[in-house]
Length: 136
Image 1 (cartoon, one colour):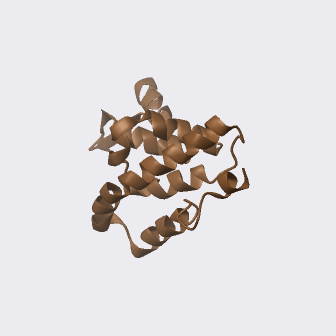
Image 2 (image 1 turned 180 degrees about the vertical axis):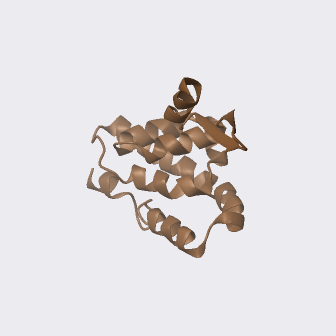
Image 3 (image 1 turned 90 degrees about the horizontal axis):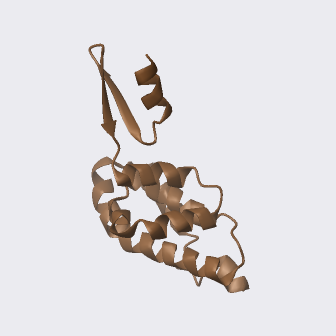
C-alpha cells in the first residue's frame, strides 16, 4: 500500500495503472511531465522558464497542454526586460511547436478542444503584439 500511495502521490511523474488487481507503474515522458507542470504554473515567468528550458521536447507537448501553455504565458509577469524577452521566446517556441501539436490533435481532440486552443492563441501577439510588451 505504501508503494502504491507513493507513486499515486507523485502522479505528475509516475502513472499508476491497475489491471486485474495488479498495479503497474510507468515513468511519464518528459512531454507529459512538462504538460502537468505548465498546468500548475503561477505566472507567465514560471511558464516561460519551463518552456525555454525544454529544448526540442516542446515539439512533443501533448495537444491538451498547448492551450494551458498559451494561457499560462498570458498571466501577469515581471516587467523586467529579461523576463519580457524570455516570455517572447517561450511564445515563439510554442508557436513553432504548434504544427507538431496540431498534427497529433486531429486524432484525439474534439472541436470544442480545438476551439479552446484557438481562444488561447488570441493572446500570443499575432494581432499586433503581446499586451505587456506593447505597454513597455
